[in-house]
Image (cartoon, rainbow, N blue to C red; front, side):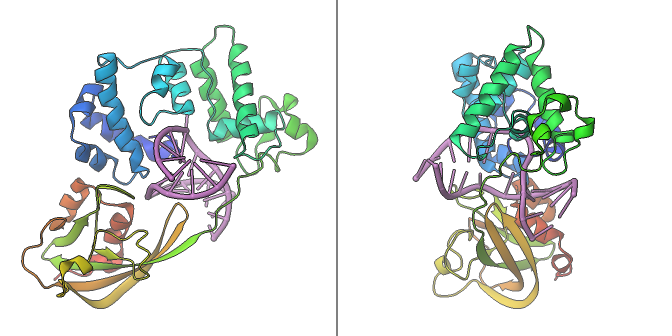
Length: 319
DNA sequence: AATTCGGGGAG
DNA sequence: CTCCCAGAATT
C-alpha cells in the first residue's frame, strides 16, 4: 500500500484491510474481487492483485510463513528492491538497505549526487550509499535506521525549502556546503499531459444508480463506474463498449448536462461532463446494473465515480 | 530506458 | 495550478 502513496493516505485503508484480511491465509483465500473492493479508492490497483497473488505464493512456496530473505521477498509479485529491503529490515531485523523517494532525496543531497533522478547512475549511487550506511551500523537495527532515514526525508529534508537548520547531519551535507540543496536531486523530466474528455451518464432508479463494471484487464480493471464514454474515440479511459455494443437502439438517452469536473490520473488530464440520462431498456444485463450508494461502495467504485457521487449536482438528481 | 499504472495533500 | 509520495511491472 505504501508504494508511491503517502503514509497518511494509507493508514485508514491499512486498518480496514487488516480487519477484513487478518492473516496471509485469509487474504489468499479471498476472491480477488473482495481484495479490489477493499483497495477501492487507493489507486494503483495492480498492487492489490499483486498482494493477493503474493499471499497465495506465501502459502504455496513457504507454507504460509512469510519469507524474510531479500531474495525470497523479491520473488513475490509486487515486491521490488524497496519493498524487499523494507520487509527484510523492518519486519525481520535483517541488515538490508532500502531506497525510497525520501531516502533518494536525502542521499542525493548528503552526497551531492548530481545525476538526474531517473538515471541508472543516480539509482546506483543512492543504493550504494544506502548499503554503506547500513554496513556501518555495527549490528544496530537496520529497520530503525531505514525508517529514520525515510522520516528525515519526509519531515526535514523535504523536496522544497528543506529545514537544514533542524537537520541532524547538516554538518556533513555536501549539498548544503555547496549551496545546492534547492538544486538536488535533479528532478525527473515531466511527461507531457494528455487531454481527455469523458461523458458520464447519471441514470437514477429511485435511490439506485446505473453502474457498469470495467473489463477484467486494463486500467482500474474490475472496478465499477457510472456509464462512461470518451467522445474523442481514443478509448483511453472509456468503459466497455457502451453504448455502441447495445445495438442500433441506444439504451441510454442523454438529457441535460448537470455539470463538469476535472480529474487527473497519472498523465491524463480529464475533463468530465456529467449528464442526466434515462434508461430505455428493461432490466440491465452485465456488466451493467443498478446499485445503491452503499452497494456501489461495497462493489468498489473508481475514484472518479466516487468523486462524481460526492458532487452536489449528482446528489440533486433524485427521481 | 521509457511508460504505465491513482489519488491526494502540500505549497 | 505543480509536484511528488515508504515503486513495480511491462514494453
